[in-house]
Image (tube, rainbow, N blue to C red; front, side, top):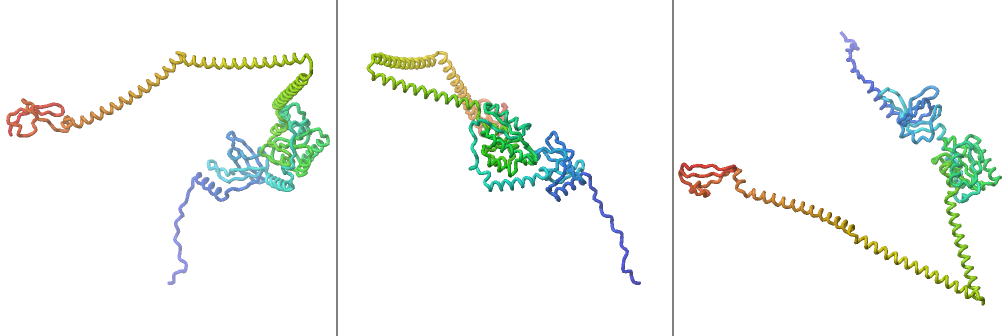
Length: 454
C-alpha cells in the first residue's frame, strides 16, 4: 500500500523562555535608546520647571499632544544665557534615556536655547559681516573721548537698573560733571527708532561732549533692538563721541561695534567716561605748585636784574645794597658751614654710639653666650659621634675576641683535658696513663675523670 505523501509531524518541544527582571528590562531599554538615537535636538514648551538646591534643572518638555520629562544638570546649565521659566518655547539638545529606578522615559539635556534664538544669531552674524564690509566698524573712524567732559548724555530707560548704576558711579568718581538723561525705550520693536530719535535730539541740543547708550542684561530677543542696521548708521554718523554698554560682558551687539568705544557693563562705561576726582585734584595741586615755582623763579630773576641795574647807578644806596648783599652772602655761608659741622658731629656721634653699643658688656655677654651655646652643641655632637665610634670599635673587637676565644670552641662540643696534679694540657694520648686523674674543661664548667686503660 502506498504511503501518504504527507507524514504526520511529531510535536516540537516548547522553546525555552527567557525571563527578565524589571531591572534588566529597564537597563536594556536605556542601552537601546542611548545607542540607537544618540544625541538629538528637540523643541517644545517648558512645564513644571524646578531648580533644585543642587543646581540641577528638572522640567517637562511638551507640545500639543505629548510630553517628556527632562533634566539639565548643574555643570551643563551654567552655559545657558537666559533664565528658563514656565511656558518658554525652547530648543534642547540631549540624549533620550531611562531612569532605571522608576522606569521613567526621560531626556538628559546638555544644551538649551530659546526657540528662534539660533535664527536670530544667524541674522545677527550676517548683519555684522555686512556692516563690517561697509567699513562701519573701522577703528580709523572712531572719535576720541574727551578727558573731562563738560556734560554727559545718557540714552537709556529712565526706570532701568542701568541708569541707576551709571549715575552712582559718576557721582562717586566725578560729581562735578552734570548728566543729562535722554529717556528712551530699550526693548521692543520700536525701541531702535526711539534710540535714533534720542541721538538726533542730543545732536540738535549740542549740550553734551559725550553720549552713553546703555541698558542692562537680557536675552538675545531683549537686546535685539540694538542690532538694528539704521541705528548702527546713526551711531557711526553721530558728531558726538558715543560709548555703548549693552547687556552683560558676554553680549555683543551691533550698537557696541559701531560706537566709538565699547564697555563691558553700564558701570564700566561710567568708569571710562570721567576721570577720578581725587586724581584730578592731585593734578591741579601739581600744576598749582609748578605755577608757583615758576612765578617765584621769575620774580627772583627780575629781582636779580633789578639789582644789577641798580648797581650801575651812582647812588649812595649802592654801598648799602652791596653791604646787604655781602651780609646775605656771609649769612648763607655761615648757615651752610654750621649745617656741615652739625652733620659731621652728628655722624661722629652715630659712630661713637655704635662703638659703645658694640662694646657694651651685656651685648658682648650675649654674643659669648651664643658662641658658647654653639660650642656646646658642637661638643655634644662630637662626643656622641666619638662614643658611637668607640662602641662600634669595642663591638668589633669583642666579636673578634669571641671568634678566637677557646670558649667559643668549647660551646660547639669540644673539651680541654688537663692533668689533675700538674694542670698540664693533655693534647696527645701518649701523655695519659692508667689511674691518672684528668680534669675536662667544658663550656659551662669542668669535670674530673680517671684513665682506666691506655
